[in-house]
Length: 316
Image (cartoon, rainbow, N blue to C red; front, side):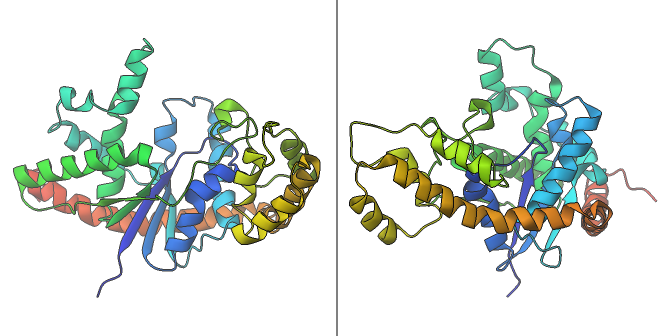
């Protein structure tokens, strides 16, 4: 029985935090041991919000280092960047010719931008079509996503189905893999951990930064259990151990925060040191990305040849 294929895209958008790790990154590392995988750095998707070339280049390198540091193995998965594969944008245009504007106007990102009266660029409007091309070129079985990203997979399925109906069976319909067991990781202020809220604990933080972040966690003085501290703590320590500890130290918020600091340091320090090792040899890391791009290019090229033949433009 053929091994299943998973695919996920990551925007080069700054430093990851522990919410990113437990919400998605860790799942990719687990999946690579069970399935063939494609993990791509979607740099073209980032263009609609990032227009600083130097920052873009640095972000791409940082995402690469981040994913190597957490344990993505280039022998098990194909790690590459979107802009290395011209077939992504070529297929997007072909899909553009069969998808209607009213259909794309249903997309959440477009509706959110419209509600805020933003001057919406075409990239924001067309974002789901490029994402569909990212997905469908590689024939994945599953796309691991959070519930908020499910619509993008549904759009990719709809586009694949429409193309198949017009031109004949070409694309596999992928299934979203909703990671239901992943709770929303609270930030230091109790809201969802997010860079936009400035309430994160960086995934590769140094000890002093971990300490500063944890000590700033908002605690609920009306109860014995500091909910936000506990919610983060249970990500890295077994629940049965924590229940006993939190009962023994009921109301002792400072001691519980100090324990969380030590446990976070034990969890983060191996990742942090591994990242520093990769950072010592950037050319070696970039070679991994380039090699991944060459592997992905072969797969994308075969699929695009099939697409060109189906639509009638391949005449020699």
